Every structure is written in C-alpha cells, then in structure tokens.
Length: 620
Image 1 (tube, rainbow, N blue to C red):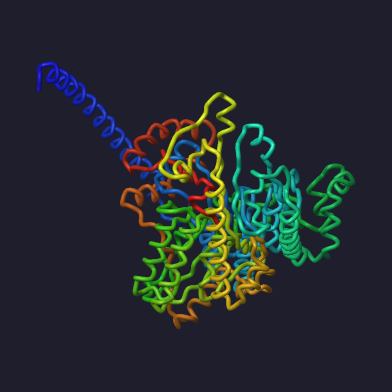
Image 2 (image 1 turned 135 degrees about the horizontal axis):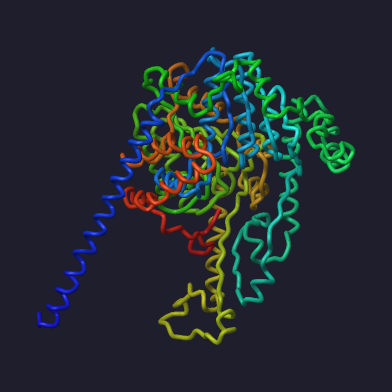
C-alpha cells in the first residue's frame, strides 16, 4: 500500500468513526425516548382495568374500511398513526365476535350500531353482519338501535340491520345504486406512441380493456349489468324486508329523491322519515337519552352507559374459557394475488402457502377455513396456494372456503378444489379467464429522436425489450401460452366441480357472476357466510361440540407485539381523549419518533412491488 493510499484510508477511517458514533447515539437517544414515552403513557392509559357494568349498551362503530385482515405490519401501522397518515381499518372478525359475544351477555341490554365512521364495506360483508345481528336478536331478545349523522348507501344498509334508525336532524343521505365507470386510454396512449399488446382468452375478460379501447365493450357492458342488477336486487331486498315496504316503493323513493326533497323543503331527515326509511329524528342529546332509557345513564348522569367494541373484546378475552384441544384454522386470502412473500392485506404465493402449510402441520388443527376476498392476480402464485389446499386434503383435514365480497379469477382458482365453497348472495365470483399484457415504446422514443438498433445471435435476442417493436413470433408464443393456461383453468374447474369442460367454457371466458348465479351454474356449493363455513368444517372433522377457531397469520416479532399492544392502547388516547390543541401538541411530540421506530423494527417502507401486466407473468 503506497503512502497516498494509506492517507486516503486513514482519512476515510477518521470520518467513519465519528459519523458512526453520532448515528449510534441518535439511535440510542430515540430508543430511550420511546421507552420513556411508553412508561409515561402507561401511567395514564394502561393502568385502568376495563369494567363492564350491568345495563350497558354495546356500541358497534366500525372505523374506516371493514377488512378481513389488517394490511401492512404492526410497526407500519403504528408509525403511520403517529404521523397522522394511517388509513383506519376494522376487522370483520372483531365485529362478529363482539356481536356474538353480547348475545348471551346479561350485562349488555342493547346493541347500538353507528355507521358514521365506516368508510367502506362490501355488500357481502354487510350480509355477514346481518346474520350476526339476527343471531343476537333471536338469542337475546334485546333491542338493536342504529344512530347516525350522515349515511352513504352501504352505511344505510348497516344501520338498517337495527330494529329502528335514529337520524340526526341535519343528516345527509343519498342512494345511487351500482355502476361501473372507468377511464379509457387508447387515444392517449396512441398520441404518446405506446403500443399495447394484449393477450387473452375470453371476450368478457375486460380488466385490460381501458388500454386498448376508448369505451366499454358490449360484452363488458352485458356482463357488468347482469351481475350489478342482481346485486342491486339483493341490496333492495335487504332493505324492504326490514322496512316493511315494497320493492316498487323503494324504487320510487330512489328515483324521486330530488322531487321528494323539494317537497320536504330541503329537510332530508324529514323526507326519509316520511318515506319510511328511518324511524326517528333526534339530535345527539336526545339520542343518548333515548338509549339510556333502554340501558342506563352514563357516568356523571350523562349520555348512556356504553362499552366500545375493542374494550368489550378485551373483557371477553379475559373471561374466556381454557384453550380447547381441537381447532379450526382460518387463513385469510385478501387482496391481489402476488408472487413471493407479501405482507398482510395482500396474498403471496409463498407467504399464504406457508400459512396453509402451518395449518396442515399443526396436529391440533382438525379443519381449515380459507376466507377469500380477492379479484385475482398472478397465475403461478394462485397455483402455489391451490396446491397447498390439496396437500391439506391429502393430510386428511377438510378445507372449506368462505368467499367474501369477491372471489373471482385467481380468487376462484385458489377456491375451486376445496371440499365445499360458501359465498354470500352478494359475492362476486367467476371471471374464469386469463390474460397478459405488454407495452412497448419505440414510437415514443422516436418522437424525441431516440432509436434502438443492435445485433443478436438469434431472432429472439432482445425480445423483451420495451424500446423495440414486438416480435410477431413472440406474440404467437405468448398467445399460445395464454390459451394453454385457459385450458388448464377450465379443465381444473370441470374436475373440481364435477362439470363438463365444454359447459365450463360457456360460463367462463372471463365472465363475472354473483354467487346466486354461480350456485345455479355449479361454481359454488351453498349460499352462506363465515359462520356457516365454521359449522360445515366442524361437521366434516367430527368436532362439532369441542373446538375453537384460530386465525393463522404471519408471526409477529417481540418488538412488533410490543408495538401492536402499544398501538391498540395508545390510539384512543391520541385520537379520542385528546382534542384541539392538546391533540396537535401530542402528535408534534410523537411524530419525531416515527423515524426511530422504523430503525428499531426494520419496517420495510421503501419498496412497493410494481405489478406489471406482462407476458412474463400471466394474470387471472
């Protein structure tokens, strides 16, 4: 090593040591601050035991989007909450568990439904909740009251599960039915010089249509209207049965909303009360007073005595019986199906398969329920998951599928070989088809004077370059592979469902069906919800009187468990107990810790998988 090199090395070493020490000091400082914060908040938040008093009301108020499984890691959710960027979610299982638990709880006098903070929920999930509320009503004979300030279409369906709906005098409500509208990009892509190469089987497989057309195809319109009309009938039937009005009455109300509101001098709450869609109009004070008459007055003689869903679930967990030896495992497959390892809220060919494998290898697990809520994704990942389903069956454990809001295309692929398939009337399924899409940009580059040229040892060299014209032989190769994949799909469906391949082809070709339609076609077995799937799985495993359900999900590290616990207990403290200046002040204190939490938990926030529709990865 010469003198110059030695000097350079020593200079870099001298720079490295203090920089490293500064980073280590910052890390340690932030870690200490986090621990101090936890201790301080523990003094205010964590020391109080949850007390469930007699004559309480259980408040079911879903926050954000209702999902089958939280998305992302606990550390990511905790960090986003501190930064104020969290998208709230409520798990369906928590809603169902709380409602079912309250049915036989003598301390609960009334079930209160509040849709105000619920951002989004599917009709199939609403029907699951309908079943749960009916079980509560039939078991307990207790009243169910809905209170609301403003309601969208699906929020109203949720409120209508109650015996009566109490609406705020200043409320806003609106019904618009179902629709399917998208942007179409063909002209825009042509102007940019982008060539879109779409390969598919099935004239109804319309997911990629916006890239090759300027409008919706007749086939797509036919298919969409067919299933949406059925969904709207299901929605309408759920309303009129509880409102004691006819379908014609409901249609008239929806079609004449503008004129009816004008006749009511713009008073929307009064309009819907006259129409029979709500029962009472009361402001917050009188709502609370009314519910207190059904339960009891709250603390300091204010409001009504209540317990929220999460506190109630904590009470149930503390009081639960000894763990049972027989288990039914639930694995959630929610989101887009992607290759490899994926976090919760998505479906990974590797990660979801490993959860199913865990259920298969666990001797205490006697049956598996796969909860599917997916519109599809990668072919290979879907097949990986389906193979694990077959492996569980070979191991002698029954597999029952419960379809959520959607189980189409790849979502149907992973479901088709189960022992039994349940779906809600409002489930969207089918879309049995396959496509791949590839874009090339040589004309785009030519517009700015960039050209591509070169040589190769065969005609296939550079075949996948996006800056070249697509090789016609490569297009033939891709289409042949797509055709083969489609034949595999319909053949597998025919074998799994006991149908003829030719018959499956007629109902496949990418067409979407509601579960009611799919049952008539033989694509599913029964109309039912998650609870029906549990009962069926228990019967098949001969454990009807002695089992518990467990949810198999990615294991949390000790740090993530700490963060999950902290997040659950601190979130109410941050967002509910603190208001106005105090809330902003606390967030200002907590936000600087977010970066440190990323370092401590090694949260993966930098990379987002870009899922390209290309011939390298054909899609279901």
